[in-house]
Image (tube, rainbow, N blue to C red; front, side):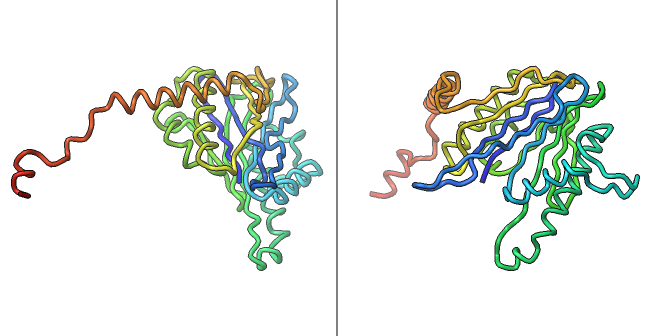
Length: 254
């Protein structure tokens, strides 16, 4: 299990991914799920993955070698696609090919589903963000709902849904995303540190920030403590529900 989120606000793109692939009492391993391609001022393609690790690795290997594009007859790679939409389509074809190659194993009740978030900008195009499904189809993030999630999303979704808008400051969006991760990690052992994150200005093909939050990160620990305190304070400030028994109810029970 994993949790990844991409947020596309007016100022730019924020993407965050955890690194946990297995979780148990004595079996915890990590794997980088946020991959950057280019990040050189001309081409920035960020890909985060959730689901079957073997499927996503297979898809990324196929994408590096070239995935056939039936519309052009050429093989697409992240070096050759001309825009982020084409990058998402190529990633979808690679993901579908990788998953289809494991159909026989699925008959043994092994799940090889996976999904990707693909975002960025090529040659100054407007920054875009796509969710790519195992079947190869993709949907685009837009201003009305300026975020996409994959993996264990249910615990972090309410926080983002309440707090994030398209006009949210980019680093405020990063803070909201980190709070959603803190809540998810508290609810599910299968999501955990380290976290990898990217921040890129709109229309820019080089990230403004690429950072890993590890177990010793002072800011993330402070954020977690402050969020817990804020929730406790807010809960205490809400009046007690007025649904208990009143005087007449008590008399009627005597």
